[in-house]
Length: 392
Image 1 (cartoon, rainbow, N blue to C red):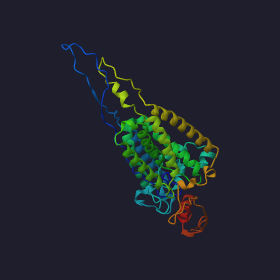
Image 2 (cartoon, helix red, strand yellow):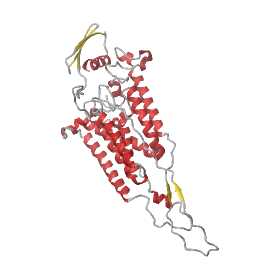
Image 3 (cartoon, rainbow, N blue to C red):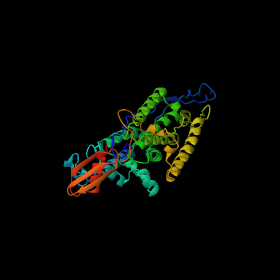
Image 4 (cartoon, rainbow, N blue to C red):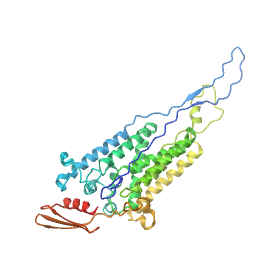
C-alpha cells in the first residue's frame, strides 16, 4: 500500500508544506485632477488610498474532509477486526480495532484485503467489473495511523489557508478533482497493486498554490523567493515518492490536475481594477482597467481546455484497459528507483498452503520461503495475512 499505497501495506510519504502569506498592500487611486475652481470655492485635491483585504472565508469544508477521513479509518478498522481474521495483532487491547502485525502493515492499520473490500483503487475491478467509483473512494481510505496523521496534518496546514482565501466551493472542487486526477494516473501506470490515500488530492492543493502564485504574480511582494521556496518543497515531496511502495504516479497526477485547476479557480482581479471601485464620486480614473490581465485570461482558457481534455483522455484509456507502461519504458522510475538498499518489486504476495490437522504449511511462490504454523481450521483471511508476512 502506498500513500496512495501499494499492496502489501508499507511506508508512505508525508508532506511538509507551507502556504505563502496573502497580500495586503496600500495602493493610491489614479484620478484625473478636476478643473480648477475659483479660489473662494476650490475643493482640496482628492487622493484616496485603498487598503485591499481579500475576503476571508470561514473554513469548514477542509475540517469536514479531515473528519470524514478519520471516520472512514475508524470504520475500516472496525471492519478489519484483526483478532478474528489474523493470527496475531498489534495493540490487541483495542479489541476489533487492533492493528495488523507490523510485518504485514508497519503503518499501524488494516489488511490490504479490508482496504480492497471498502473501496481501494484496484484497476482490475475498475475496468473488468465497472467499479469506477473506486477512483474516488480510494482517496478517503488510509493504510494506517501514520499514513492518516501525515495526510491530515498536511491537509490542515495547506487546505485551511487556501479555503480562507478562496472559499469552500473552489477548494472543495479542487481537492476532489485533483484526487480523481491522481487516481487516473495511478491506474494507468500501477495495475498490479491496490492504492489508497489522500495524497493525490493534497498534491493538487500544492500544485494550485504554485499556479496561484504565477497567475497572480503582479500582486505579490517577495514573489521570487516565494516561488523558489515553493518549487523546493514540491521537488522534495515528489522525490520522496521514488521510495518503494509509494504511489508517486498519484502524486504527479494530483499535482498536475491541481496546477491546471489553480489557473481556473484561484485567479484574482488586478489591483488597478480594484482601485477603480473606490474612486470618489464625480471623478473618473485616468484609464479604465479590465478585471483580469490578458495573460491571466490566456492561462485560464488554456488550463481549462487541457485539464478537461486530459481527464477525459485518461478515463477513456483506463476503461479500454491501456497499460501506460507499454508506451513508456522508463516511466516506472518516476514512482520507484531501485537501489542496493531496496527493491522496486511490488508484485502481490502469492502463496500455496496446505492444512493437515492443526498444522498449516504456507509457501511463498514469490521468494520460495516456507513456514509451518500450528493453526487449526485456518480461515482464508488468516492465510492471506501469513502469506503477506512470509513474502515480505
